[in-house]
Amino acid sequence: MAEPNLLILAGGVFAILAVASLIGFILKRTISWRKPHAVIDNLNARIKAWWVLVALMLIAFLFGKTGVVLLFAFASFTALREFMTLTPTRRGDHYALAASFFVFLPAQYALVLADQYGIYSVLIPVYAFLALPIIAAFRAETARYMERVAQVQWGLMICVFCLSHVPAILNLDIPGFEGGNLLLITFLIIVVQASDVLQYVCGKLFGRRKVAPNLSPSKTWEGLIGGVGLATLLGGGLWWLTPFTPLVALAMAALIAIMGFFGGLVMSAIKRDRGVKDWGQMIEGHGGVLDRIDSLVFAAPIFFHLTRFFFSVS
Image (cartoon, rainbow, N blue to C red; front, side, top):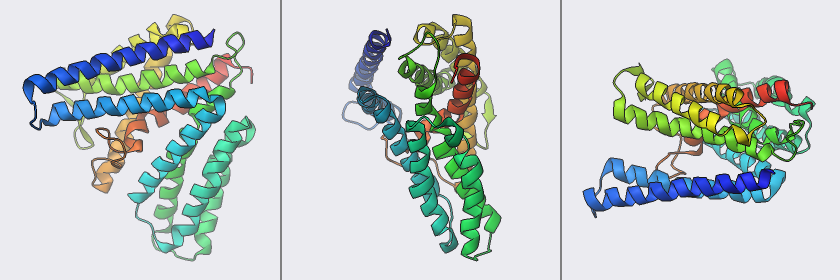
């Protein structure tokens, strides 16, 4: 039952991207043909990037659980690299960084792939958080020790632990929903990413009052309310993808859209602290991988644990 729904959904997403591409082309042709235009060029770059991102997701889905786990492991590696690139580190942090990239990151995803919830749910927040300060202490470099350790821990928590909850959704055993967990991942990603886009659009059209002007001047109350509200309605309309009732789907969509907003706000605060606009330049029009998934990393663990607690028997 899940596969036909996934095909219908993929067709709908491609149709939306095709319409968006046509609109982008018409705007470029009629307003700024062969001339640079910041807004239209950025819009078209974002649409092109979305084609690539959706294609990558579908390819990963074709390979099932292994493909999804590998895709998000790669996203975690890239995001952690972006995070650490903008984090001031010293020679004494090198072993802790190596452990983060080449021990805890692959171990976390291997445990998710092996469906070992009892271990992957505590590997980073318990074992890595205890091991990293020990590893750093052995280098005997005490300057800004607590600050340096906390930065490495926070990067690992955000980029690896939180994001790994997306493929972990495939491990949930939901009675009557067997084989449909890819649709749950799709529901989560569509609602969170749609909320981002709709907050941007509503903010551009109606935005007046800034939510946190010192952190993110582009985030407005009008954009927040309009984006989260529309994403909530979208999530409610996609209840058929999930084991939820329409009302529960609405509530879940509202919660993950709000968490996604807070994720973007927190990551904006870190970028402001670092004095940069984007985490990287890997995705044209979007910035880095971390710019694209900053809302997802805050929404995924909440969505996973609520679904597991109320609907799963695993």
